[in-house]
Image 1: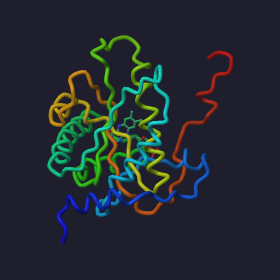
Image 2: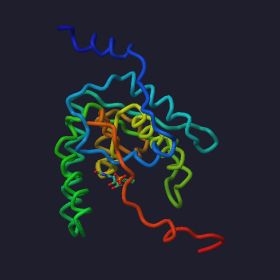
Image 3: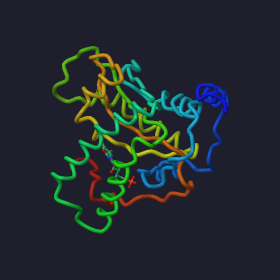
Amino acid sequence: MLPIDIVDIMEDEVSVAELLPLTPDELLSTTRAVRRRLDLSRPVPLAVIREALEVALQAPSGGNRQRWHWIVVTDPELKAQVASYYRRSHLAYRQAGAGPADAAAARVTASSDYLREVLAEVPVLVIGAISTGDAELSGNQAGLWGSLLPAAWSLALALRARGLGTTWTTLHLRYEREVAELLGLPADVRQGVLLPVAYTKGTDFRPGPRVDLDSVLHVNGW
Ligand SMILES: Cc1cc2nc3c(=O)[nH]c(=O)nc-3n(C[C@H](O)[C@H](O)[C@H](O)COP(=O)(O)O)c2cc1C
């Protein structure tokens, strides 16, 4: 048996992931919130995360300042602590909610409950964050978050293209300060998203339910 850190180094040297044969539109329309189909038992080489992040870093940011940061958490103890903050927040959110409106919503809720319970076992947690330079965060913050979130979504797409999956999550942000302290983030760095990443069980995903385009499309005014 090799010590874990040696295995990690060897895995890191393994380049690079094979890409699924998806058209751009298939990739964009089948990158789902994956929870139950995350493969918790298959290790994820850091090299694959790095490769997907290299793609993600091609996303735009305001003034091309690229003040994003990507905190990749693989340490079991740290993951467990992040997951326990997530769990607390998720349970509070569920208790405050009215309960699912229909069968489809009930499935999402059950899937979300499942992720809450297994979050610590997901091989990699990636937190997308952005350095604010201590700017006052008030008013419309589209410029700030628009300089982080496109790259985070690119990461989700690049992972899917490589046979991995994730779910966009924000519930741990109720404990943003605590998680920042746990992971040693500087005071001016704000977190925008937590992506639990694993290989998916199977790679066949279908487009999800969405509102009719005509109910949200406004041409030349509302
Ligand atoms: C801003 C945002 C926050 C979200 N937060 C959570 C979360 O904390 N936990 C979770 O399980 N899913 C979360 N989701 C995932 C949504 O439930 C999911 O994207 C939505 O149901 C669509 O899923 P689909 O693409 O598989 O149809 C979040 C999604 C977004 C965009």
